[in-house]
Length: 187
Picture (cartoon, helix red, strand yellow):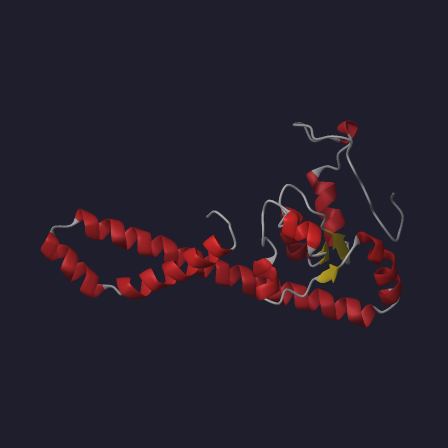
């Protein structure tokens, strides 16, 4: 479906080569569509936390997700939405895709709501990714320092530990690793 109000596209099956003749939208066209979209439907893929969520946030489009409790909770990737829910992601959460029409009708013509929500998504996403990158850097630094301390002679290792705040980095790593483990995610 393609008109001034909506763009919906499905491919009949996955193919290695991305081209329109295979039923795909090219990456440039896809990017253009996302940048022009107010909302992006983010259905479950192999994992509920699909790349489409991040792509829509990056483009300033508001992700619409389903969190019905039952199907989501019975998915093999349990709690995949937990980081979003915990971080108060300003997404549109529906109980079912059947609720989509009513939601869209309720916001139709309400440009103030849409613009505010898009602004919230961009601000949230920028902060979320910045925090995630900082946590990831802390893990890398902690692992690097741990490896460097192991490669030094015992007296050098003790000196190295005093010079850097390895204990702080280890606590950060443990916190980060615990969150990942609780979310059943693999770094």
